[in-house]
Length: 405
Image 1: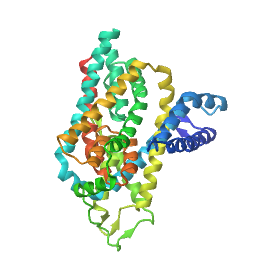
Image 2: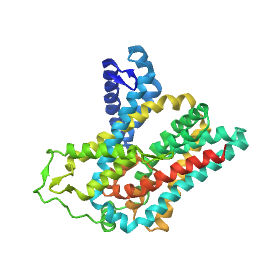
Image 3: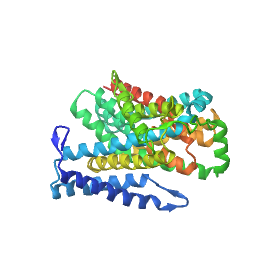
Image 4: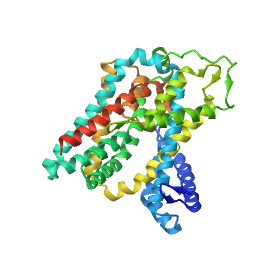
């Protein structure tokens, strides 16, 4: 089997599949551990993947002679991207029916919150760059590359990561950006996942009341399907696949260094298809059970691919000061954004937290929030805020690299 210019053997594929299932099994067990009502949930898979990648993956691969590190890394990227497509497309379909009504009602709030979260993240990053230069004497350009990498990891933003790498002036600085991204990614995932669980508990929120408030803000859109439509297949795999292909194609278009990426393309297309639900007499809406299964499967695969690949970098280049910078760049925009949404924009709790997940571009946190809230409707706030944050974080990352050259 040929993959990215190299031969990926059956042995390599078998090893990869074995690792995926081992990590998934252990990760879900870890995620089930609950302390005072708080658990990692699916993010437990990410922790196990990170540890597996740091301490076991490469030694096992070398021992079993399953292929070069490059080929194995490419295979992990396929696992990650497949998971991302499954998750984001499912979220778009689920949120689609009520998305445009919610967006119309809260459009200005979502834009403002998305921009504020990224600006606070950018300002905290700039402050850390200056601090690092003054205290540790690191060159501004090198510190800028590392800290912007930390920013993209803190916000778990692949587009910002790609934009930063494209903007730096050398291969060495690209490697530094990648290291920063890997170091901050751990807390970027876990921090937001815990935040969306802890805030409702600290606020002693009544979830039934909060779901009712969310329904008032984003009322259930009437189903456009009448039962007489033609189903392309019983579970909706065909419609799902069509939207995923179109989303990947749509997200691949570049405008300068910016593109919607696979995430943005699949999200936007699935939102549109989920809103209309049919084309003429043909149903383009997959079954709800299909969407929920793909959403969870996609999140699991995404976390495994990202976690294993990031594990080695995290251990190899870890420094406490960089990890602390990453914590600051995760917590500061998230907390300020939450308070701004609550006291200034007056968003209800679940809309607020859904928007925070979107503003922080946190795919894993959305999965956790859906389980915590007990409703899929929080995905609407995420989907509304995410594109704003996506554009903003790419622009801010590029700006920071340029001004600190």
